[in-house]
Image (cartoon, rainbow, N blue to C red; front, side):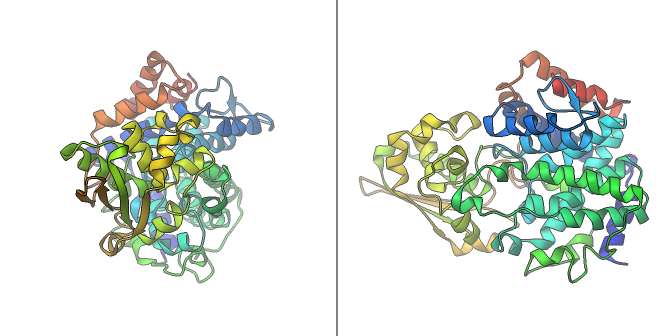
Length: 451
């Protein structure tokens, strides 16, 4: 059986009653994490452009945009919410794929579930299916797709979105094959922004979510696509020099991607998290301040050198969140790396800038050997008094090997959402997510999302 057909059969056959309780709980945790981010960052100036754009379209009032009173079409809601969810470097990660499934899959699934008045159980099924397909296909493409300049979230995202939407809309396996095939033509997203800036990368989650909805609708109408999109020589493998199709189907339906998701602690590129944890560990055993530091060497993987090691002097918030030396300087000077630390004031702080000049990122052979399954980091701090401290972190906080609890994730969601929504209103959203399996109509969740 082809990989494409196997995936289509899996999605069509997935049932809520077959999901173990811990998997349902994890799925709800990831939905809440994503919705907290969407609500909280919805007012960022670079993301308000998404709302302005979709409101300018001819819309049927089908689905909700986070923090926005009126409804728009499901495809437009998924576009805006997917941009919100990926718009401030706080969204979840599936490390083997180097992709962020939350903003893509959750946004597409909730928009369509709200439009079609699906149950909460159906939404959970769809999210599990979407994470599975996006994660496995992204894993097959990694890590080469990154080196070729493709962004994994938008490269594999439409495949996950169409799986979630196809599940919600009841597409049979034959139609799902074509949905996957059509979504392959929406797989894209390049990363020149890592070198020369620009905010468009923040929209990749929304682009992928909307593409999946469109692909499912076209397949349902009868459009066909190549039935070998996942394994053919000119299918998705065209984005990778190291394509490994076996990971798409090995263990499919046995070990679920949604159980192996990394939920971010810091509002920064994922390559920065392990070094940031290492700084905290060193600081706990030897308290220090910026003036005590002579030099910091960060050992990471080769991709980190290209992605977060190349922006030595960021000029905007995006660059700030993608600069290893600035992020660690922020961590040391301000004693934190949370969402509220990434401000214009801190970007232009002379103490942060001065320390950043003494922080360097280099390839570490051991850390590089873990990539992409694990994204670790080593930090060596040389102090002005001649002392040296070193720490190696294999599993940073929030990864499957060092996970956050459900309570910690809720605390994070509350904190981020507080930027744009009152605690009382967000309590309603939390209650809707926590009771998803009992909701007869996901519109209740949509109403809470609008606030």
